[in-house]
Image (cartoon, rainbow, N blue to C red; front, side, top):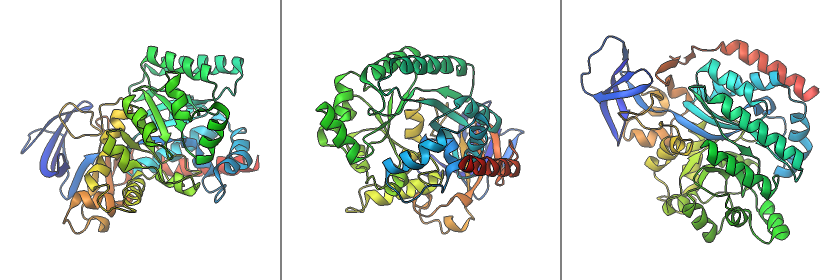
Length: 415
């Protein structure tokens, strides 16, 4: 496959052709020859977005419980409904979310939720790239901890056979998991060489209660037990001290930033510009559609950049925002994606330069961050395969999924 006559995002913007052989970018240059040609005239070719934190099947609870604080939202609305989820609910909730992500330019996602075997099925059917983990919480129950760890290890071993799916471990948070459980999870993760996906420092109240009980903040405690390492993917990290940021940098912990969810649940604004300045790897996530309420990483990228400018307009530039949404996501999830370079996997999206949000072209990188909306995403290629062309998804029946998901969502909230 050769993508011709497009503008590519590669250390700036340049007009080049791209050769894809199998699932890999093998050449970038001018006037490349070949038989399988995709005409990318009037399009910008950029890496697909990487959504590094979501709970995908929560699309079924989109708009179900809004405008309440996090703990009330979880305790009174979300957790009671999640107890009633079925595998089929999650299958269609996952597919619904995947359609939304593909249509807004996301080519890879990192999920923590229930019935992750159904997320595997949905990812394989749609052709999207995924890192999947079942949520784990022992609450001090030894038997529960042993069972959950056993199931997560089995799941990780099962998906090793998959080309587009990887496994992670998903301990919910330091307040939902005993320290012994977290240590055992990290021990197994190191053996299997997989990421650990965890919520960390999401709310000020959570930190205050934890510190009152244990005498240390969650970050300090996790560091003291040897849990923090380069495979830790920490979602939110909204409230931190300078000392805690230094710990994250030293341990090479990856931060998964979710600005919309943080704002909607009144959790605050994470100091992302400060993290980037320190050299902490920050990537971007949407969180679940019950707390965002979209899975549109394009909108998330814009919000992230704007929030960091609240006191200084130069705190985050467009180039940094794009890197966080693409390259940093690939690095965080251990996939060779997020760049248009020789040897990288062919996960790319075509942005229609005739779309109203991309006109005029004074600065296309600026347009990507500050003006582009998901309607500009025209074509999506994942792992060298065209998944969406002219905004039509080729792998799943979009209309059927929407109808099925609507029915499951209605049944769930009335179950």
